[in-house]
Length: 176
Image (cartoon, rainbow, N blue to C red):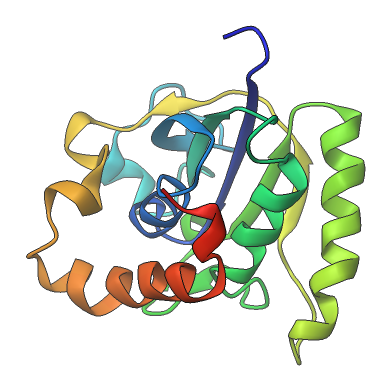
């Protein structure tokens, strides 16, 4: 357990990015939650209003011997649209912004490199924020492992299923 690393990021709804990232080899644990705002321990219903300053984020504990931070961020940056400001699909507001919260200078440097690598994949400029990690608050239990627990829900079928399928098509060698 001492060789594990932590990454914190989101690209819109945490349910979507959680469903993608948790399927990767080397992911030891994953929590959905909130970060980047000014209210301590915010409940989901408050974050959804956009008035807390928080974004819906995931915090991932991973084994860098199995999946590198570079690959993790590259997959993240190609599994959502990093060119839409405060929005992913129908989800709108600052709580759905694309953001990477780096935990040290090495993560910051690697993320900047990945930004340069993926920029040519998009017609529009990348608006994903890159900020130093501050604090992470767990979301309520019903938001953890959401896709796996609710695959019959319309939102999962319409919004998340295509993201999971894209992961399988592009990164088959990296998934469990």
